[in-house]
Amino acid sequence: DTEVTQTPKHLVMGMTNKKSLKCEQHMGHRAMYWYKQKAKKPPELMFVYSYEKLSINESVPSRFSPECPNSSLLNLHLHALQPEDSALYLCASRRTAGDREPYEQYFGPGTRLTVT
Amino acid sequence: AQTVTQSQPEMSVQEAETVTLSCTYDTSESNYYLFWYKQPPSRQMILVIRQEAYKQQNATENRFSVNFQKAAKSFSLKISDSQLGDTAMYFCAFSNAGGTSYGKLTFGQGTILTVHP
Image (cartoon, rainbow over all chains, first blue to last red; front, side):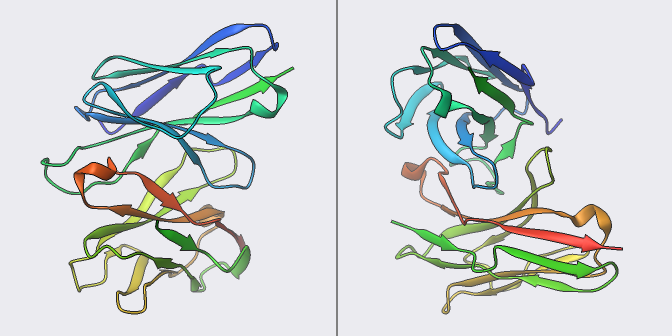
């Protein structure tokens, strides 16, 4: 199983709402990632979790709050977002150092978020 | 810091023909990985091909092959016998091999490839 799933597929939220994005993988990967992608642009890294610990935060505003409850699940909690936060949010996972190669990231289909 | 440059914002090719997408990168690291990812319109990003920097042999995956020139820091993707399903945005990406990088990917700006019937 080389699948990363993300829910919901689409989300429309107001600027005062609180919502969460969910990402799940069952490949035994211990590194998980959140990206933000605008149309016709490359993904921008937001957060990296390694062994369920936040390892990289790319100076993301606090209105985005990541959580890794276990090795298979990654959440992104959203609160008081701005219209410019509208984008495709991608989750990815990868084997960690020490595992056998290769080291590519597997991406989920994304959640298309619209902030009104 | 690493940088990845894709100098071709858009390309087009006729079905069944061959096309080459360019990618150059800059790094001071000696051990790293290079990837080409494909993202069809409104669809999932998938890995096309990977190359480990320590391997001299160019990677191939069916109709996809790379020309990896480590000294020149060049990593081009050749698509042979192009198919309509190859229409997508293609991203070149770099990742350090070291554990402290946590596999962080640096992406190029992407090349939109359109395959015409």
